[in-house]
Image 1: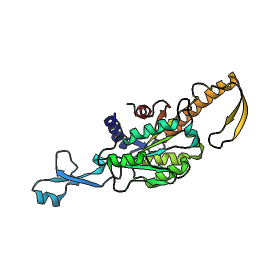
Image 2: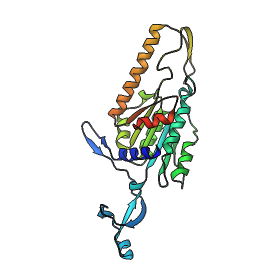
Image 3: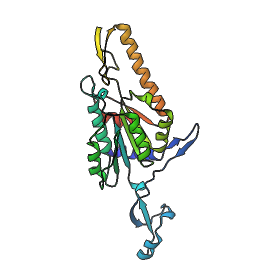
Image 4: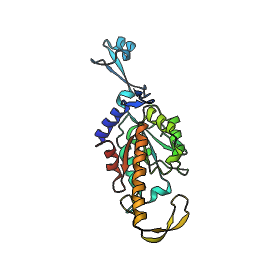
Length: 271
């Protein structure tokens, strides 16, 4: 699966993106960082021939850049109180599985980064699996704010990076269409939307006291058949609308299922 995910990410890095209504363009990464010299083979870009190295070696030498052989993997992971909810286990556990699988695709020359509301975490001097491990376990020092994290991603990540955002997107109303479009244009963005734990049915009846996971405020409500039906319709409508909005902004979307975060990630790529 790791190899399949890498291939999907390389395809995604060069897929057409929207820069405006009806205006597709292909984005290339900015990873023109020298990786190695090797002998020229048919099909290589002649603009990358290193003539000084050719003179020394007596045969055509071409410069290989990291854009050709490496990925930049970045992730935003929502660890807010609402992600600590779940039917059988917290959604955040599934999120951790998904982000570990994401960074698990990193090979030797890949760069890994983690975006939090506090800033960009990029392990100094590390690449590949060691960098991936550090990013998968990166500490957080501030309460999660989706917009703050995405603004940092937009400003700090290199163009063409593969960006995974795992969140329940409960504060999606703080995000502008302009921000989502800029992210979808500049990066290969994947949103893994945490599904409401009570998506199938609300297991409550009669008068109940409900608490807000984020604010800890409480309200006493009556839950009957009509209320449960309206809840089912509302969470489905919200999920559909969110997927459609992200899709219009050039994002790939998938659903984070509580039971299996890794499988949720691969499903978002059709794997």
